[in-house]
Amino acid sequence: MDQAAIVVWDPCKLQRFAACRLTWLDFQSPAVQYHRHPVSSMRKCSRCSKPATLHITELKDGDVHALHLCEACAQDYLSNVEAGQASDDPEELFKEHIENSIEDLHDVDQSSCPNCGITFKEFRSQGRLGCPQCYLAFENELLPLLENIHGETQHTGKLPQRAPEASRRQFELIKLRNRLRSAVDAESYEEAAKLRDEIQTLESALGEEGED
Amino acid sequence: MDLKSLTQTSGEWLRGTGPESDIVVSSRIRLARNLAQFPFLSRADDRVRTETEELLQGPISSLPIKGKVTYFDVNALEALDRQFLVERQLISRELAESHGSRGVGVGPEENISLMINEEDHLRLQVLRSGLALDDCWEEINRIDDALEEQVAFAFSEQLGYLTACPTNVGTGIRVSAMLHLPALALTKEIQKVFQAMQKMRLAVRGLYGEGSQAMGDFYQFSNQVTLGPSEQQLIDKLKEVIDGIIKYERRVRDELVVKNRQRLHDQVARAHGILSSAQTITSEETMHLLSSVRMGINLGLVDGLEIPTVNELFIQTQPAHLQKLRNEKLESSERNVARAAYIRKRLGDSSHEHN
Ligand SMILES: [Zn+2]
Ligand SMILES: [Zn+2]
Image (cartoon, rainbow over all chains, first blue to last red; front, side, top):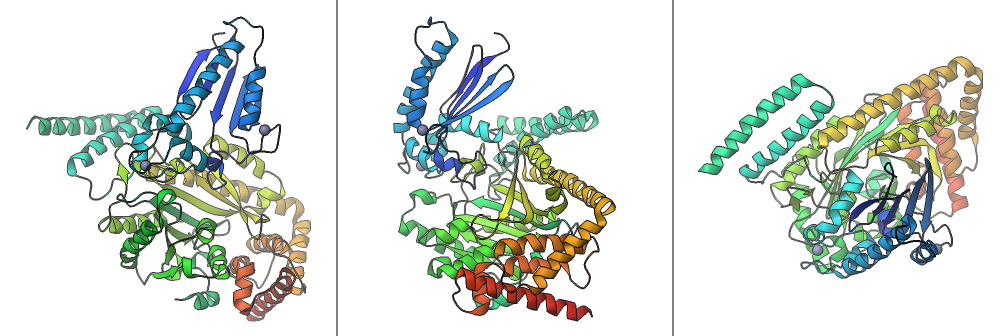
């Protein structure tokens, strides 16, 4: 029991709880699977030929079972994962959890961006956001998605030329901390010590500025 | 520069020079950018599309580069001309096939392409022959800086440059290199490369010509992650991986030459023979045979033929190019005849030059 967990993932939230198998359930919009986007390839439902929107990966005794289903077949599949089991049974727990997730997803689908008016459901079906403010409007839903796609949620690359000097330095700090982490990971301790000094200098400079 | 004059030339990136150019055909970096004050294109009506096009056209025509940027109004082009630009890799299929105000600015020698109103308001792209990712970055970064002096791009301190699709957010960068890997493909070792790439979150795509036919052992390697690492970190990672693949391909080529020189030489000579004499040939067969010949040149098994000629043939034997060259619409079977004639002429010309 201790080494395994069910992971139910959807764009809304990432949740884990203990059970005897590891499962990812991910709701993906067909447009995100468009071939130019390498997140996942276009798949057809394993039971009918409609495009699959649910991808279930089960890790059971070290074996990987992948299942790709359309919405209709997924409902059907989930309703079969039941019957006559005690409520503390992991399968039952799993089913309950998925039902909750689907309900949550329904609520989130109706939410919209106050700037451009796009609903989350529209985003899920096209895979394209409507405007820059969408990233704020759907922040709670998008951050887990970004984490899943990129493995990170903090930009450390280029900063626009016109960014104000203060945020430029804040950003420099984020970058240095990021480099420090890589240096420690790579066991380059000399480099790490140098970076730590740079960070301290910058931190105290920013601190003094804040006191003004 | 106009479409007519483009048919007489080829992109600088096809010239077959630059580091590792026997294996690395070209390097490319693109950046995705959006104007801060407008909705993304999925929510942009005709008025917004026209406005973003007009707003960007000025800045992209006054870039700090050598030579002039030529602007093509893609919305006003015929289907054949749009296809022609796709084959030259100056615009994406998406830009060719969408509708409404959109266009592309093309830099001198076709090394720069600036697409307006594709998936994002602006897609900048810099191409180079051979393995030259640092050069690509140096140039595209400079162009991006110059544009930022004139327009404000959508940016957040946490998420970086904001893009229409969350898969591009952050740096908005796609770093890629096109590699010719005939030996790894022949020995099926390429499968191992695919598996390794997947683990490292890098993408590999085959190159496709007409329809979905795979195009002679060319593979494009690129980053998938755009948020988190810096541009330089993403470039360095891809360079490191590509170095490994180049060594792998060379080792397998050397082994093939040692073990099967005669068979290899036979395969290459037959490919050259068919290309030099066929009377009708499909795009698919052309790609396949050109791939063999290209490897043969690099292994010293073909005389009197240069890599740039072969590189150019890959592009110029494609459907829209053949029709532009002949200045008429051609059906598929007519194209196969025109293609064979064109290849015979090019291979004949180049062997005469060397005799
Ligand atoms: Zn189905
Ligand atoms: Zn919005």
